[in-house]
Image (cartoon, rainbow, N blue to C red; front, top):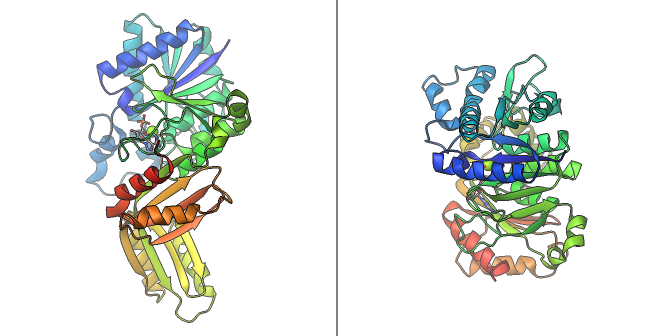
Length: 404
Ligand code: ADP
Ligand code: MG
């Protein structure tokens, strides 16, 4: 039998009208003869009644009193509510279905509560449900440890649940249904004329996702990429096929369009703090000490630039104060610029093309945007700008590289 995995995000499940669209996609897949596994996120977004952030509000007044293990139990509720609601809608419409939690679906994880990693999947119970002719609804974002404790996979974890199940079940493809038409050349909330990318390679999308394009989680793409499992990112509310993410060679086989573009998209990460730490006596050990101090405090660092006069890097805004205190404790005099944004120009074809950096600098300076820091790799060029310049920067770079 051909197996299809469909994943529906929060906004796709939050209202009865939206769920009618979900049911339409489910009916369509069943009519095509697929055995169907549906992975669901918690309903809605922050502020909505059963969204994960809302559930966490219930305990926020108590500070850090809820242990990580129990916190995961609370965080599992959103997906559970969503799955049971969808099951009831489906059964009411004459489509038999059964719900499995992440643990029941056989998703075994590490015991890093709140950010667990999938170790293996034993999907026997999913196969049982499918053999009974039912749709298997699986709560996304969840797993269980060897001790049967419930775990969650971290932000965007439902995407990873979907592709990992796709791999374990040898699905033909995984459909990620969301509130936009697919993967676009930039976040449509910032760039109104962002264009749909009809086909992209795994590596392009891993890059976009790592650099902030939150339409799909990077771990989900990496899991699919390792198993060469194609993904389609598409809208719940439309019929269109959206974006096909697949192996580059396979894509080339079908069409040539991919190789022709050297920039795929513009992505961004807001709310980062730039930290500049001057080197007091031009010795080299300060660099090691700075990054060790960050590691010891579990502060993740990015955009690192090391040179004899000191080090420069970024942390998320909410970690800025802790990072500053740690550096001051060691006798350094760090300078912090909070509220910055990292903007990335991404494309497999960037490598070695002369003039790209000049084009970026020109596009930004024409808009009076100052670049605080920059770096590049073979497939990405990053610039750090003030947060107040974020929207202007993304628009300017989109205009420079991707406008029709
Ligand atoms: P879901 O709840 O379905 O998982 P998300 O909010 O996680 O939805 O992801 C969808 C959102 O990702 C879109 O509403 C869009 O604003 C944002 N996004 C950011 N970058 C991109 C991009 N390059 N293409 C499409 N959407 C993007
Ligand atoms: Mg998402």
